[in-house]
Every structure is written in structure tokens, then in C-alpha cells.
Length: 83
Image 1 (cartoon, rainbow, N blue to C red):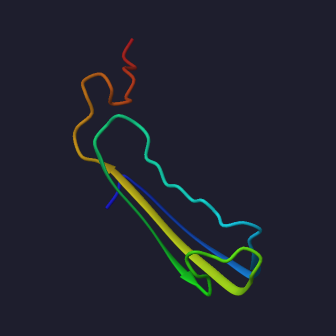
Image 2: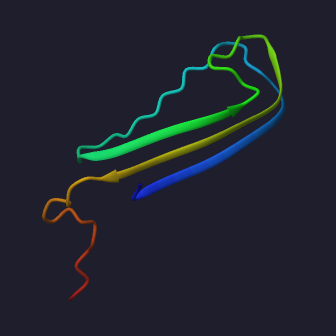
């Protein structure tokens, strides 16, 4: 899926949170779209415990989105370059 797709993997030997993180994924805009995001964690529970140290951590994250309809006339993003 996706007109836009993003993948990232982060590794840490040691990781500690001072407070529980608040993660939010948003897809702003007015066009209709299909979107998905997913993460796979290694040695990192959900939710994490503030103050606890986690070792040999990995997080693989994937985000994808695509428009589900054609852009409105005049909104395609293509500029007319004919003089």
C-alpha cells in the first residue's frame, strides 16, 4: 500500500524512559485516504515502565498512506509551464 511509505528501525543497547511516552500518528489534510502504521518491538513492552532500564532494544516502524480518490481539478500539483 502507499503513495507514501516510510520504514525505520532503531536499536539501543540501553533505554530508559523518565515518563510513559505519548505517541500519536496523524494524517492531516482534507483528501480521502487509506493509512496504516505498525511497529514491532524487541525487548520493549507496551506500555513501558518509567524508570526501568531496557537492554538490547529494537523498534521497527512502518507507516503508509495513499489517497483513495483523484485530486480535484486544478489541485494536481503540476504547474503549467507553457508560456
